[in-house]
Image 1 (spheres, helix red, strand yellow):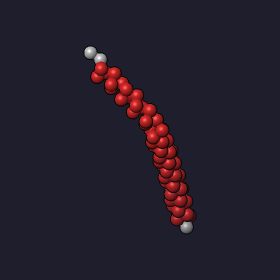
Image 2 (tube, rainbow, N blue to C red; image 1 turned 90 degrees about the vertical axis):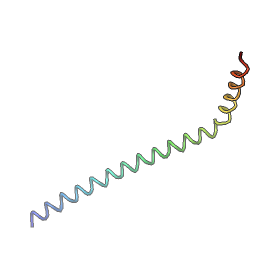
Image 3 (cartoon, one colour; image 1 turned 30 degrees about the vertical axis):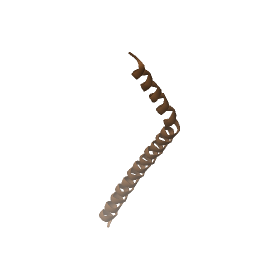
Image 4 (cartoon, helix red, strand yellow; image 1 turned 135 degrees about the vertical axis):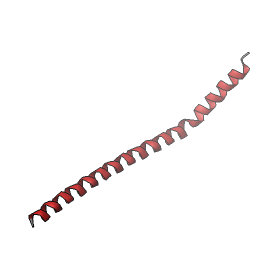
Length: 65
C-alpha cells in the first residue's frame, strides 16, 4: 500500500505543478492582450495627428527641387 500511496503523491505533485505552469501562461497571455489593446487605443488616438504630419511632410518633399 505504501508504494501506491507514494506513486499517487508523486502524481498529484506533478499535476499541481502543471496547473501552475498553465496559470502562468494564461497570465502572460492576458498581459500581452492588455498591451495589444493599449497599443491599438494609442494608434486610434494619435493616428489622425500622425497622418496629417506625414501628409504635410510629403507635400514639402514633393515641392522641394
